[in-house]
Length: 364
Image (tube, rainbow, N blue to C red; front, top):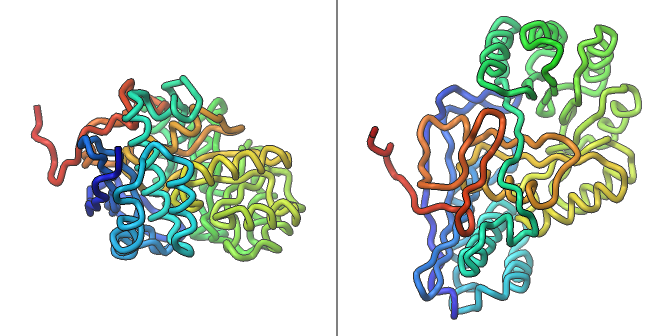
């Protein structure tokens, strides 16, 4: 049995609410879906989200990488030799982690489908429910308080608040969210590189002094300022979570050696797929760092793979897997679904994806 073809599909789908961070504002998910098809017509799916301001990955670049390099590499090869195929993909090009992740996940999905088991079973787990936080887009204090009340009413008990757009007003924003969400709700912050090291320490110390009970602060300073990240982590008590500062193993090793963060956020589109993500999680845990799995703005394909990884291997903190929850309609048929504050994995082979929608599906 061999791989018959590797196909690409450009997808765009609207969000029900604009997604706003210190880095960007978007109202759509723009992504490239990769489909690896075996000789019997079974398909495995993966995706490479376009995130210009974070990873630099584009649909055009990912598509060229898949079609010009990975497709010829994989066609007529044995899909059941999964470790070898994924290793070949990782070695074939420099960078292009989103494209690598899309093919890596598609190969895993196909392997699970060929065995007739859900992806989580292929990865070594059995759970079908994974908790998630939900993001509050950057805004003023009144907007954030209103969003916090709504998300708590929706059933979420972990809120990820986007800050970093205006350091002078961020303490007031967090205070408003805490008052609106109540004492039982966990609050975490994501500055998306928006603060200088001094601003970060000033804001976080203000939050600590005010007793606002923040669980963690994600990527307070610029991704490449690992020294600044370490400087902040050394001067505050709230745990610091590295996100954009860690793409692969070398980045994580530097963070560990510099003691630059207390936790790491692992994303498939940053590190290149399920295999590299598992290695990052294991290395972080071995060195006493907390772990969390997140995502870019992706569809049920990328989120399903990330949730399957968490279900099989676990993390020390509630993962950040709400991206597909933001979709006004899903371009994916089947796959994961959301139930209150949980991602529910399908009881179907692989990712459980049956196909793709180019336009909104008809209303029942």
